[in-house]
Image (cartoon, rainbow, N blue to C red; front, side):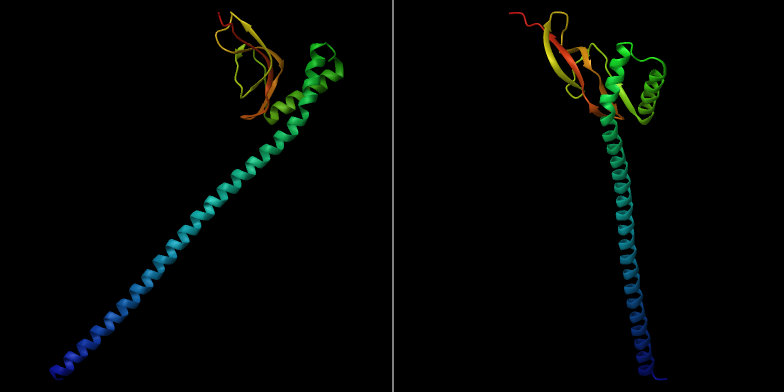
Amino acid sequence: MSEENLAASEKELSDAVDEVLNEATAVVDEVATLTSDLQRLQAEYANYRKRVDRDRQLTSELAFAAVLSELLPVLDDLDRAGEHGELTGGFKAVADRINSIVEKLGLSKFSDAPVTFNPEIHEALTHETSTEVTEPTATKILQPGYKFKDRVIRAARVAVTEPEVSK
């Protein structure tokens, strides 16, 4: 073989190798692009699942809160009946059972007094002044408040006492 033929053969071989390498690079780039697209879609799907699960949980809690808020007048009536000594016998057993069920579902009553007035959990119905307090204080609970988990379903209705301003 002559040198010209050898050089031409090497050039053809070099061109063929370059062409194969370019095709391989294109395939690798396409695989990398598809891999990044797949990873992005997987991340979007994972975020979607988390959001759906969170929304499902929130919807469930809101439904429970709505049902429990409809029961609050009944619970108030049971409390008043207990205060007046009208809960006896079978009726007391039913009242105790209702209270234990709503507590098991996550409803909790808050009715501590005296405590610092907090407008997020208290609704002021009356207002007084006194030298015995140093800050606005819920001194008397007129109607207890209820929470479902961390959400206030009904604010406690309270009598608020503020410090007396000296003139």
